[in-house]
Length: 311
Image (cartoon, rainbow, N blue to C red):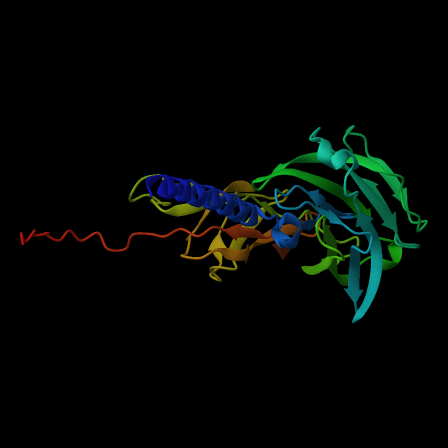
């Protein structure tokens, strides 16, 4: 009976270890390509817009890679226009853990020009709007947001002249494959309104981090800080969390945000920044989006006596 119990215990242990490994894999199951915060689209100056698109991501349970149906497009006056397609390989350089990965890029006819800025050799790669796929591009791969290997395709897009001073909305539709599943999943991300050849450098905000000056200081314990950066003068700002406009004089500094009991997705700050030095014109410009992590504060610090009753 004892031997039976031991073997049963061992069997139970093996089963529990197996389940924990399976659960661990499921918890780690990669959703990197399904989260908008990992994609970035922002104005990088008066004449071009910068895109950062993850095209392959490692996953212990399964790897992700983008399919050629992945589209980057704009919408103007209700009409959708394709800008480019991107994709990556399922295997090849991506799996070798050499800080390099693969990507392919195709710019639609008549849609300006583009320069790939994430080449592994550090040299920019110029792409014309001939509608053809590039050869295999060897681009950078790095760890990001707890995912150990992510291959990035980054590029600057220079819209055609007929889009000058025209407003349009930019979208990325991600079609991604998992190695152990047939077909692909689709996610669409909206990056807001841009103006052709009339964009100031977009403000950039960092991922938040915990910060405390002192228990009564401007930040205080339990606050989150993030770093912002602009290339022009700024007067005011507000955020998606707090619509109150506040004075701001520095081009780069730290700002603070209140955490909540749940994750705050899509947090952005809007800055009243200098648009044109010669004409002294100003305008409101939005930053990139970040997620504010959950943080559970202790709200009641009252000490109460505890009396032990012996039974």
